[in-house]
Figure (cartoon, rainbow, N blue to C red):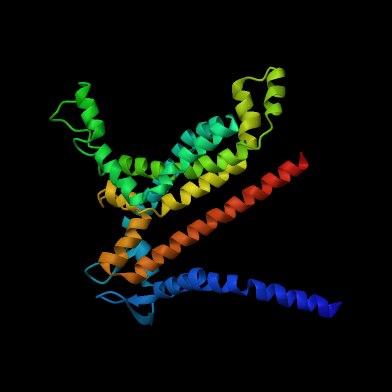
Length: 302
């Protein structure tokens, strides 16, 4: 029996070996390279010197002045804070728009559901860069929105709404880009909901607000948490919307990392910011796992 058990274990390990090789080469390997680069010394012309240094992580909070004195530099803290605020705002707006949309889809017939889900996923068929460029035409000076306001007489032809290259433009681009990632998980949770619960609550004279607060919202909580994670994490590291709609004036974490590798040639600092972003994502996923565990315990107790 022991020999058979050992053979099964060996077969299981061998069957998973290709998976671990792929994960090691394409996921763990690049992360190790990035972590190694973040602990090296920067080369003026790009690349790194193979010498241990924490200057990349130090640069997140501190900088060296003209007298070679280390002093606190809040510039990158402001970028991190802006990234958090915009990512949270995009997540909240996506939830505000996506929850009613997901609920409406879940209450339709199977044929209509399939059509609506198809329409929700259509934006993923087009490259994100092209879709973001479309918002330049919509939000830009003389674009769709300003032309509509001029046509209705709500705006002078010489005036401008100045929507482009602002935090508002970046927020619109983020919400538009990742809204389907909020709708689909919430729909998956609501689609499983037993309609008889709503009918029973209605028979017991529950108001619509009570239906949402006590039945619909708790039952859709796994989808809300999952959708919020799927929206918040990519918004935190986005760089296409900040570059195109923000004009490079409103840097976020993703655009800052891309700038360090492509233009500033400060690879250790870019790698350090990437590892910092990865650490934030891991903390968010751990928090999500704890919330899911508590939700399962709560459901089991009920």
